[in-house]
Each structure stands twice: as structure tokens, then as C-alpha cells.
Image (cartoon, rainbow over all chains, first blue to last red; front, side):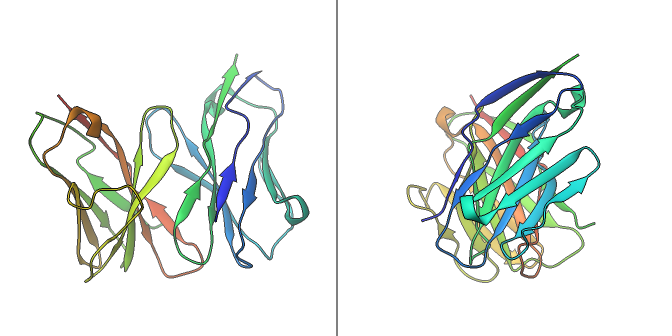
Length: 113
Length: 115
């Protein structure tokens, strides 16, 4: 069975704070992909990153960074110097041997000015 | 980049009517498309996998007679909510797979409200 757990339901921070969104996954597949999506109030899903299971290198893209650790089955997402525009629901997702994407329950991030 | 378009973006209908939602891949061919449903403040739940030229594969608990899926061409999949009721009100999102290796593109979503 595949499962994605985002234990943080909601996080509130003040602008310029750093914030980390946790994601823990479960899968028996040896090859899989991990994703992060942002969903603003408008509803559309904004793709942030895709990482395959063989690439454990951390990645940085501007204020965003991701920490993938297979040993703990985690794929955490950090926003540095958060901004009000970062307010949204963030979903971590897992894809195994099929193209089915299994989503976590999401973390609602609120960034206050 | 690749674009997947959904239509309509939002629809309001009376209880008992049927509603069709289209999902189109605009610049690539998609053998496989997926339909998700999202209730307010909840996650996206996979409803079914739509395969071009064959029957859709539904997830457990999803009524295939209620949610008709047709994938008649490599660029179009449709979801028809038959005899819609207020509990069918939700946000429906499609995604299209381009090739393999996890390349998925999502539509903008369709918000259905059944009165």
C-alpha cells in the first residue's frame, strides 16, 4: 500500500520566517516519484518539484528547498524568508510503479504580514 | 510547457441533471488521464484512471454508473456526473500523463455545485 502523511494540518508564520513542511511516505516500490504541489485559493495545482527515488540530492530553487531522505522516508519542503504570497495549501504526493498520484492530506500555510 | 485544460471551470446545476466536464491535453497526446475529486479543505482523492480506447479503471468506492468516464481520443477525456445530487458538489481535477517517468500535468479544475 502507498501512503503519504503530512502531519501538519496548518502552520502560521510571520513574513520572513523560515518554515518547513513535513512529508513522510510509505511504499513498497523500489522506483517511485515524490512531488510537491501548491494549491492557492483559486484551486489550481501548481507543480513545485518532482524527485525520483534514486536521486537523494537536496534541491534548492530560490527560496524553496527540499530534503529527501530515504532512510526516514521523508521529503520535507522548506520555504526560506516566507512571504504572504506563499499562503496556500501544500500537498506532498507519491507515485509508484503506475502513474497514479497519491496525495497527502495537505498542509495549510498562512503567512501573516 | 505542456498544458491541460478543463472545461467548464465552474458549473451550477439542478439536482437530477447530468453534467459533463472535459479534460484536454492541448499540446501532447495523453494515453492516460486521471480524475480527482476534492471536497472543501480536504485532499485530492483519485476517482479513476482513464485510458484511451478502453474502459476506465475506477478506484474502490467510486460508482462507475454515477461518474461516467470516456477517453475517446488521445487528447480528450470526459467525466459525466449523472443525476447529480448536492452531495456530488465538489472540485473535480483531471491530470494527463505525458510519456512515462512521472510527467503529470493538471487541469485548472472544475467546481461543481448541485442545487
